[in-house]
Length: 435
Ligand code: ATP
Ligand code: CA
Ligand code: CA
Image (cartoon, rainbow, N blue to C red; front, side):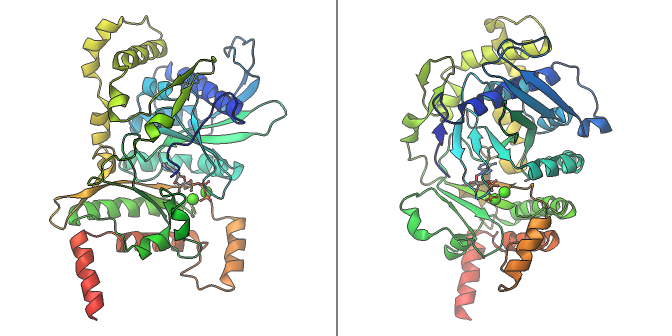
């Protein structure tokens, strides 16, 4: 993980794109949420709405800084999904407001996708290929049903699917999803695991240059790592993973990974450097240096201001007169605080993560931040081709482009085989040695 990304200010090449994305999100999400909630209909899954923004504004859209077109996909479905994932609408809009430009992680994968963090690091915007966008639209019905039946799913949580286009520019599709990693905790190690060994190595010598790099399967095996969970948590974890993977297999999706971020409680939060590097930029021209959102900062510096803003937004959404701030404070306890909300989600309930346990189910030293990511690649033509070429000189257990059923089975086998308590892992290692 690149620690905090590059700030996207007005001089950044992707400033306009980021600004347009946020402006479009803000407009379309407010528009949908301003309406009375209703049950989903079949047509909601195929819905798409196109909006034109320009500097003067029109009867439908407010004026914007740039001319661009924005397409909003299945807004009602995503409204319901955000609700299932307990995303507060006002909070969502505040995090993604165009007043604060995001920071960009650049393009960490080979796919060429760009990643942007919301200013509070809760959300990630990922640009996706046209093919991935088609996959998401196609699977949306199944994904929605799955998430509804499995609120504890480990799959990426999708909160929105949109498209932006500037005049003469290309169409850019993007999703908004959860950032699995918390803003307030150092992630000491990150692994992206697929259960394959071919090409799944991060060169150990490059770790000096980039100590927080995302490591892969071979690095994991070399370190004899395990997701250290005692019997109860292991059971729950594997059970959920199997259900999630079964869905991906059914939908013929592959190439996904288990992203594992490890916070070591004995190390704590050492890296204070990043606090000074994050800046939040306002497109109005004012540049405010702001500390990174650490635990305290996230909750305290402008609690009143945050509540006031949230209240204003909520009121705007409800189309009502804003309530004065002092009254809001009395009202706040009714609303669930974020930590309460997250506590309901089993794998994100220990300070937004999942705490390690020993063989006796007592808590361990790590907090895991886990999820199945990059799950919009269909086993299509390209993969079949890759399978053919790689298949010529590798044994199938090692190549990464096997068909979805086998991909999923291998994934589960790898993850379950590498999930055990520290005690059990040590015992297994001793046994292996004595043989
Ligand atoms: P490729 O197809 O080459 O694997 P990609 O562009 O599709 O790359 P992803 O695999 O989705 O990218 O993600 C790349 C990296 O970005 C991950 O290994 C992880 O470090 C980070 N990342 C992706 N999604 C998340 C998330 N939801 N939360 C935190 N970090 C993430
Ligand atoms: Ca990937
Ligand atoms: Ca990908």
